[in-house]
Image (spheres, helix red, strand yellow):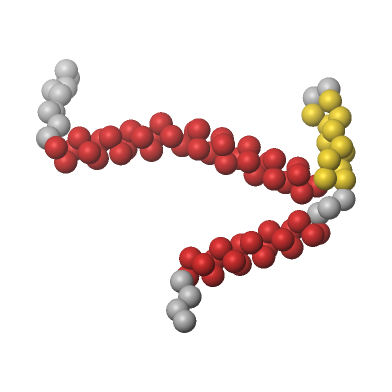
Length: 86
């Protein structure tokens, strides 16, 4: 039986995630501006990861969208050169 590399990578990542969850079950106190929160450490880690992913996607979108659009337009037509006013 042939095992795909993608399947192996997913299983390894899931096992590592289970180890992290098992080792981070205690509660922690989080102070954010004027509020105090008490939550499990793994919840804090997952929330931090989610915020990082959302910010990465939102901040990365304009450049990614522009480069894709430029590539598609570049293959359809040649860009006109704008003369310099020197």
